[in-house]
Image (cartoon, rainbow, N blue to C red):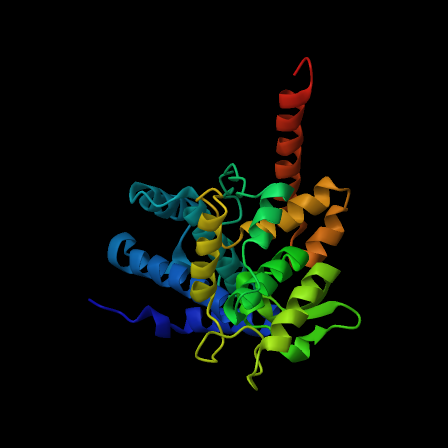
Length: 295
């Protein structure tokens, strides 16, 4: 029996509350919706109980079911987080009298340190685009802005000229959950931006455009970055987020405080930023081992 769980009033009410009360982005809400639809299907088709009637032992059975499907631990944790939020919502609405997820602990997962680049490697990458044409001028400006601000690729490609204050050298960024933040940027990034904007001949409101005069996509930009990585012989495991990781790590290495880096990155939770302190410590440890006479 095929049920359209998307239309379930409990799911709908919960998702509406996430949007109205927490201001979560559409993508985040879609992730919650997907997790709940999967959970409701399991309740109906396998466990044969209503979600509102489940106990903590039922939730544990569901988690076991997910692990048996070889779903990654990080994904199981995310699904459990969704269920915890959902059952708190039901409790507040007085639809249940006990929260079945209350005593279920989220399994600890050792965070994988994100890949990053040394300051010398970043310098190589930033020098890879040349001034020979508008495309490479654009790419140089984008790379400089990424490293100068630590913004996400999605934030970069959505920048408009109205977001730039070139006199104060700050950029207004619309981040996750439609939260705005102001990020300063340095002279190198400003110089690259001005060279690109001087050559660019367009009325498009977006700053970074493709050769059809449309907004450059995230994928389009990443294809360009791969060209420069190959040009300067940098490692191939670099991701679109690597310059963001390098921005945070290099700031911390040079003495910036964690809270300031959190604000610049637009992290809502300080614990998300803390992973960069591990990278910084790891680099220091490697450097000590390599260069100290008794390392």
